[in-house]
Length: 394
Image (cartoon, rainbow, N blue to C red; front, side):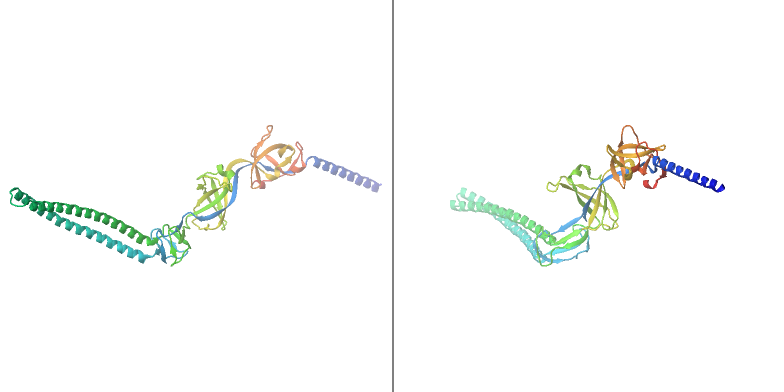
């Protein structure tokens, strides 16, 4: 009898357990477990990433001012030079030095020629004075019938010749004075050519490249040395034309990375005044303060241009579902899931900016939205919050 009662009790307990388990399963289907994440406020940025070239902002392609053979080059590649002090190279100094000496001699001759004419002028002036006296004496004798008319006419002719001689000498002196000016100018040019034969560094920096060797013929406009200032770095890049009006000189912020991996912050220092019609791009340049020498001329750089930056409400990308009528998220209200239709904007680091919600709803910082289990629920469905996922907002 007791065995029968025990059997009945066990069967009843098992039946109750099955019923309870079924009820629990039914209850779980109506209230699924979900994970929630709070809505946060974040700074969203819109960026454009391109490749750029690193180079020196101060570059000098040094060529001679005068033609001639290169006598000597005084610097080597990689050597530091100082502006207006370091000698770079010299062009045919012997020829130019001889030419300078010739011009100096010509100037001396021009000065002596003037002195010689001035001495002749003094002699002619003395002759003129004597001619005047003779002519005056002859006139008085002729008037007194004490001399012939021929003697009188000869005395007057000598006076006129003396006067003409003085005018001629004065003309020769004026001509020699012009020759003196010409000689002075020729000397100035010769001095400048001789000074230009030795070329000094136009900027401070380092010799980046030697383009010619001693003995070769040099010419104005044909560089012999290339100087770059490694302390004055500039990064240039080309951007698509569609971004032209979104980039402003001295305002648009830029991040630059090169082989070192470190990022340098700067701004756009130059924007091309026009768009290339062939490539539909425009150039920007950024001057960089690089005391640690992380950027090397000739290297490539990753240039990140900050086009826009703003504060906004942020939700993880995984919380956004695509529904027939648009994008949606689920917010937990009490113990139920409420579907909210949203419009998204910028995306940064796995978070989307919520730019708008449907008129019947609102969204604010701190609202709990479903980040786990949202694919299995519908609007208004009862849910059980299993976990608040705060890690998602970090």
